[in-house]
Picture 1 (tube, one colour):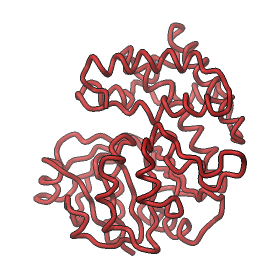
Picture 2 (cartoon, helix red, strand yellow):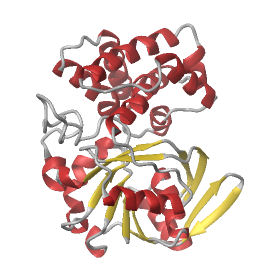
Picture 3 (cartoon, one colour):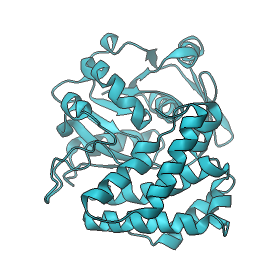
Picture 4 (cartoon, one colour):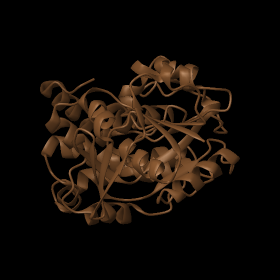
Length: 325
């Protein structure tokens, strides 16, 4: 089985090391000093007090890789439209593309019964290029729970988490999903196949759409945002609006808002990915996490005053910091 990890930074590096150690044929596509270090020294993973080194094939040239069984995309959502055409050499008739990214996925409305079936989400796929190039029939949903950091070129620190939830847009327990689940399981991950993957996407998104922008605006950690009397009410308003949108789209939440906030607080003094990106001067992942939720709110006629306010503020913060894509 050929597995390509496209955008092999922190999460991609974690997957690459574990899958390679489990015996899979893995290719990592990356760039810059990180790629050069992985080519020269392999990929080093610090996890659970242990250090692992793997030597998967690493390149920046998809044409040199060829058709894959699975392409796991671990880019930030805003990075995919500019490079999606470069993925074509990886895509064969039976290739599955796993959307291992945060936020509302570009395929969200594919095979979703109802008035919006097959609608494109402009916030994450502005001109439809992802839909047209990858094809929604190739898409597998994936909710990513591990937290990792690239601490040096070619070196990944795995902080916590081992779950990658998988699911087909149509809710089926497909052979390709089960095959990938088995491979990830052998690599030491928990990768159950869910028949309602959109429910799982919203549970993760519930936190990302609120904690990420608030962290970028305040510099606070998850624990601080979740417990502060100044920020927790803002989180609650944003999450309440998002829940109303999701439920209008047919989503069922398996946990309540209080439990989701408590779960974020329990992570402790962790900086969100958006705050880390701001501090590093990288483009912030605003549209997939917040802008897309606003877009869906407009679609289903749910007012989003708290989301609108925080979205405007974080866009301004990113613009002034030179981190707005």
